[in-house]
Amino acid sequence: MRLNVGAKIGGGFGLIILLIVVMVGYSYVSLREAKQGLVNIQLANERMALADDVTIIYKNTISVIRNYVAYGDEKIGQAVPGHFEKIMTAEKKLLEIARPDKKALVQSVINETIKYRDIVLNEFMPAALAYNRAVRASDFALAVQQKARLGEVAKVAGPLAENVEKALEEIAEANSKVASDNIKESIADADSVI
Image 1 (tube, rainbow, N blue to C red):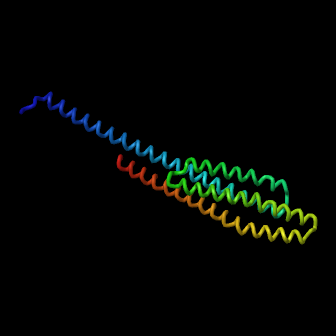
Image 2: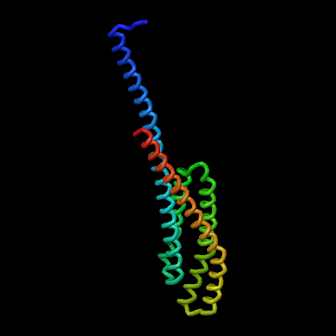
Image 3: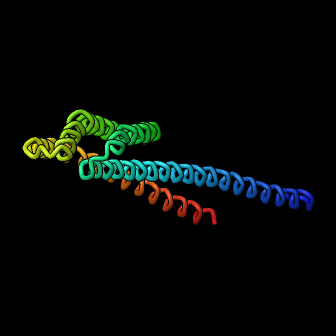
C-alpha cells in the first residue's frame, strides 16, 4: 500500500505528537513523585526539629531542677511544672506527626516523661524544698536526711530521664534517615527525567 505525501507527513506529525504526549506523561508522573519526596523530607525535618526541641526543653528542665536543688530559690522550683507542660505539649505534637511505625516509640517517650514528671514533682521537688529549708534553718541533721532522700529519688528518676533522651535521639536519627533516603530517591527520580 502506497501512502501519498500528505499521509506520510500526517503520520510523521502524529508520531511526534505521540512521543510528546508520552514525554509529558512521564514528566508529570516524575514530578508528582518528586513532590511527594519533598513532602516526605519536609515532614521528616519537622519531626527531627520537634524531637530536637523536646530534647532541648527536657535538658533545660533538668538544668532548672538542678539549679533549684543547688540554690533553693523557690521561684525556680515553681517554674518546673510549666517546663514539664512545655515538654508534654511538644511530645503530643510529635505524636500527632509521627510516622505510623514510630507512634509506639513516641507514646513510650510520653509515658516515660509522665513517670519522670510525677517522680520529680511529687517526690524530688518536695525533698529538695525540705532540704533547702533545712539548710536555711541550719538544721543540718534534717538537711542530711533530705539530701539522702534526694539521692534515692534521683536513682529512680535518672534512668527515666536517660530513657527519654535515648528515645528522642532514636526518633531524630530515624527521621534523619528518612530525609536522607527521600533525598536520594528524589535525586534518582530527577536523574531519570533528565
